[in-house]
Length: 300
Image (cartoon, rainbow, N blue to C red; front, side, top):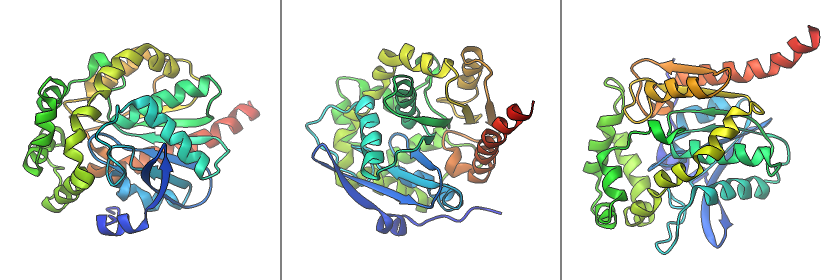
């Protein structure tokens, strides 16, 4: 049975606001139980998770925010955006919500890098991460294959490319990265664009894209955090994604001990919207296994 969507207009009404370093950040939280932090990707926002939101809130306390520069959160023009600051933001949100117990992570794309930084901070005892699941994202700079638009945003003319970015340009980009049978509808494209365009977002796209070189700088720190095996990990990946599909998972299997990976045939870069039922199934299977594993060890 298909999972029910949450219309963007309804999603927006359910959001709340807190202030992070003088900037208004929109966030959402619902449910009870172990805290589960959802971290969205570039260039979209937390609404990406709307198909999964209600079923996850039946089991966990689910938390998500539009990160600084994304969605309906503040998008300051004179600001240097950083993945490290976005990790600070996630920790600030957890503190705002007075969450002290270990936190589970479910991340996508840009959010994968934020989750990698949180894993590194877990090793440094700055945050307590209970588990982490990655959807399609650039976990390894050497396997990341950016779109032409992303390359242009990184160029000296990036500021012009960003300001000229339109809904039509978004459609053209998304047509390249979604599965052949799972393209967004026109209504979904309207909603994706609404979140990007909110607070004049195209003006800062060339600044947000700085995450790509930042990943290269932090690569060894972040890969080491995954290799330590301190936190249970899984990758759930859309196989036909040209940016970080099967080729990224192949690299993951080479570098990460005892790799736990799931490939979704025919699915592209946004599995949480293209195949939310499959993502939910594989995520809950992963979590249930974490619950049963200690019992197995205790009985052995």
